[in-house]
Figure 1 (cartoon, rainbow, N blue to C red):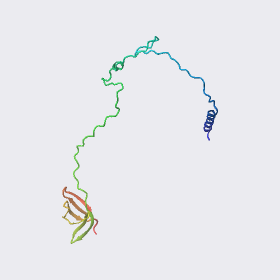
Figure 2: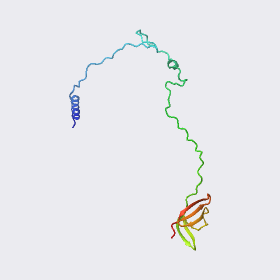
Figure 3: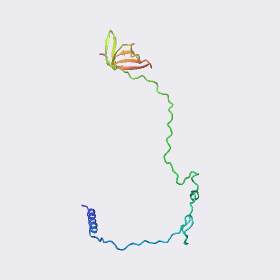
Figure 4: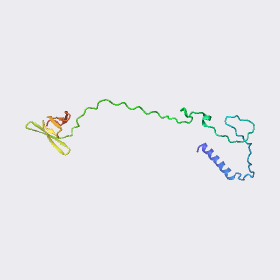
Length: 172
């Protein structure tokens, strides 16, 4: 145990002993009310004097007389102040032309290929459909097979006339 803990424990023991064995008899004396001399009411702005003036209720004075007419000038005495920063300016309008349209990615999956009578046939799948691609043929009405030369097959997206290639593997 640290010395400060022992000191605090001793102080607690002394406080407990005083609470248990201290004098608990109440005082028999009654405290009397103190009478103070009457303070005279004084008008606003008049200095304090030693002459006694009978208490009177004064009429209210307009606020403009007391603090001045600052409400109309925009310098309100207790007016609100907005400290939030102004919003940032809007971003400049992007006047760059939109990017040119691009052909979608090839929707075909390579299944296999075969060479018959010197011509290549490539078997492709789209979802659950199977296509047989030959040079010069059209697939789904949007893709034309330009060239089949393993390991690549060249296709043209007809609506935009853009060329793409599909890997069909090396020559077997």
